[in-house]
Length: 99
Length: 455
Image (cartoon, rainbow over the protein chains, first blue to last red):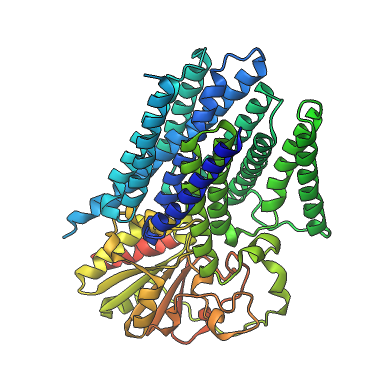
């Protein structure tokens, strides 16, 4: 990887961190559990890297095995995270017809 | 058009969806659609990654995707709301292990890597490994398998040596990535051990901090995998999650009046010995008399803690709150930031039982009006309502912000027995003259009160 790429990736990293702090500090404490499970699902984004490796058709079988395992774990993270968050948020939503 | 352009364009859209989704989490009314947006962003990213021209075989990818989806869906469907901290811990762990595996596979694919890639692969393996084993231990602690903090002499020394070993093997790996393969395995192994060592000394009461921190690590792991794969979306998404975990960690630490360093490196019990013994009489009360007190009350505040989750009493409590409202009383729920085993845990349980979120109040909103409250009902909470945090400098939790239930006119504490709380600290609240102890299982006590009201 050349220096320019490294710098631009770092640039993206720093901006994202700043944006993350800004966004998350506005989430009310009532929603902290869904925030955790939801952001957890987002962290399953590693899946994309895992997909490229599992499908790389590398000569070495181990690469494919590791890639496939990574795909599986990351997919559990993604699907489980989003679904359980939705289950929780659904319960929060119902309340508005109160009284 | 070149596929890599298409892929990157869709990644930009996904990023936008993630950000918008998190923004919509700012209010309970829009949160669900926000989560939906975020998942659409993820779906787009997955689909477009599959068209990458470097992908030769789809068979294994599809097997992995299918297995993961089924397991994930089953877990999400079956988990009880009370077990949400365990669920989040496990998911954190899976995120960590997949980052480790991505680092491993990327290394095997092209061992002859430059310094920058070498650093990022080492980081991915290190953070991923720590997140994985750390989360597994956290899960075990939450299940009550090993909730006691485990400390031994020389622990700090051992951990320091471990860290030095990790840095050394990463350094050696970078010197000659092709020849020094063994250092890659040493690095992986030590990182996994590090995860275990990092979480075992932490006590059960500090679990909300650990879960938040591991959440942050899982984001950082994704982020470092992004550097390995040279993928912008991984970096952005990972950084968002990392920031989120850090903020939650800070909130939790503040709510316990402890620094992160203190939570991580010195179990809880350290100050226990200096604690002075509290003696005195408690005033037990039965369900009938509690009913009489509550019937006369016009202003009631309910303070739930983890005991509520253990007793599965959330539905019964909601029913009691409705009865009290019918009786003309104003009922509010006061929730301490670290009540439960993870941030916001109590809110989810009460939402499950159909308590309106407008009725859930934060500690800082309730404390100023405590003097006007006729009856405060404490259900399964202990340390978060302990007045020793205000009054007794020798107490290990001195200085921690607590809900000042003892300032209410009457306090009714629902409790199984006189055992001390999770942190093992005595609670002078139980011996105050305006406190009444309603012993027994929280759920059956509350149900008893509800049926008294029905009569």
